[in-house]
Amino acid sequence: MTDVQTTKPPVADTQPDTVIDDAEEEDKEIMLMKKRVEEMEKEAMKLREMQAEQEHANGGIDTGGPMETDEDKSAADGRSIYVGNVDYSATPEEIQGHFQSCGVINRVTILCDKFTGHPKGYAYVEFSEPEHVDAALAMNDSLFRGRLIKVTAKRTNLPGFNRGRGRGGGGYRETRVYPFSKTAIIPEPPKRPAPASVRQGRGVMPYLMKSLGTPEKRAMRWELFNRKSSNQIRVGSILAVTMEHTPSIFTGVLISIRRRGPDTSILMRNILQRTGVDMQIYVMSPHVKEIKVVRAPPKGRMKRAKLYYLRDEPEKMSQIAGSNKKKQKKF
Image (tube, rainbow, N blue to C red; front, side, top):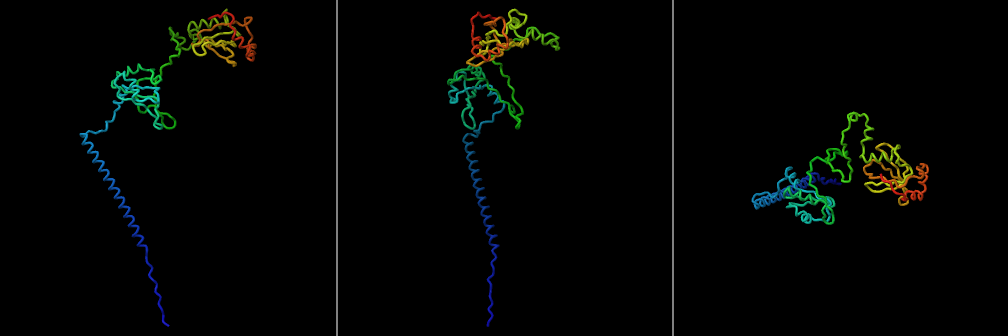
């Protein structure tokens, strides 16, 4: 028998082939990146050439406007006005036509919300000369598209003001002086200065009791609420108080009197629209104009317990407070 030798085929080593394939893929990615960079550079060169051609066509003048400085902004604000309560559908052309008689207008700006795009209801008008602002301010409360617009001079915004810092809301805040309301009643300053003893803290309350309020109010307080006066009003009387604000006249039964000098007050009650209303009125208040006695209490006075008992009887209380048979006494 002959010996047969078996031969095994050599095992091929595949590792070098995989290394070669990975290197080829990396080379391809690098080539693609280089091509993209070249394309971007070519586009940038084209943009620069187009920009140079545009500048050459404009005579070498830059079309972009110069940056406004703080002085330019303040000068523009000095010849601008703020227009409030503007109709939301108003156009810049309509606002320009409304203020055209005041002077030459450079531009009209209508502020819009950055999220919704809807107008905020106010605008700015810039004139060519600061002298036109005075003429525009005269158009305050004028009628524009069925609304009374508010016209004021535009103020210059200062950087850093009216901004908060962090979550606390601190930081610098702009303070503006607001005028007093036209309906506010401001008492006149005393004609005579306070004596030296009062300025040192002695005898302050007696001085205030004699000096607070007008002479007419002090005389009325003495006549109606002083226990030594013969015309003093008593609990149970029906009074009619005339005031500057609403309600202008309040008529009711006098429930109680609180005598505290300048802080003297009265408590009145009446039935309004089937509802019991108690009103405390301070006699020395500048809003109180006059007090009339409609009817004195029966037998000169009335017990307080009976008055509080009448609170539970709306019909009797309204009948008493609404009666006006006798002649009124004015103080």
